[in-house]
Image 1 (tube, rainbow, N blue to C red):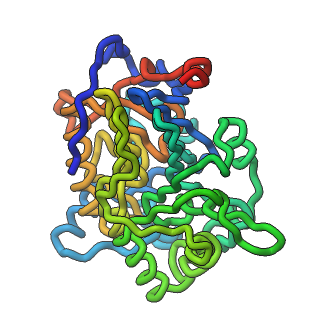
Image 2: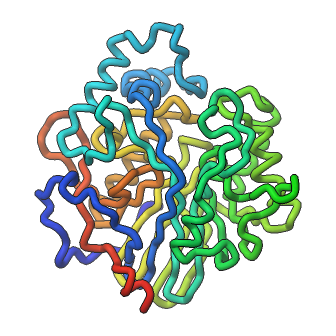
Length: 371
């Protein structure tokens, strides 16, 4: 499924340039005749071992055929003093090419929460992943975001992407930090944020979500039943949800195609979004990859995967195709820079891939305005 139109690399940044030296804003990002806008909501800071599980743990789950329970180990478990936890932290913090925005001064991962809006040359706008949202009931496990208020909708307006202008909303999967601004609270009622849009959800992901709600209710790393009630069911009730296949084509114009590609593992029906325009290709990852450290170590899973072994295999296949065909990787949780090329790491250090800058693809505001 990971087949992209080959990207023409003329004029791109020196492949030997450290990514940290180009830790600049790249968006709006031009992909051929299409433009991708980025709208930020917040940043999550978390120690590596509280987010990533070790490659050995993933291999153990693969061998036994039993995915681990969703959610990081409790502090009282003693896990964070183990060699496995220390190995995860050491590997991530030793990546010399890591942008300064990827790891903070205390060695914590920095994960952006943001939405991308694809604007095709024909004028279609597609919002990809709607972040955490305001006024959401996320409970004690997500106290920082519980009932929060923020400037996201103002940021959306400032980017020139008013909610009424969006034609499609696509959620790569249905975790709380990807569906929140599906809805907004008005006069005590949850209503669609994007009233003129078709909300697209992969059918396999939707059925998996309903099964999880039935099995767990609100007893999970996130309150699934509440998320369904606040962020998903109002879209169904408004008649705006459309269930689609995992390889659905959203837009097919003469000079631009936007389609889904199955990227399962993090969730059973997870999808990525491929943009192809005028010989240029990009993929918006969703949570197929969370952090640039997983370029080096694709087999490193997260504590929040439904199936970490499957997610790792998906990453390996995606990185191989992106590196081979010169596509741009746009990381849903990557802080600045949120997009990069991918190349194989030849150092023989056990690392598989590394990022390479793609700052040459940034579109100036004036160029976007005139597009």
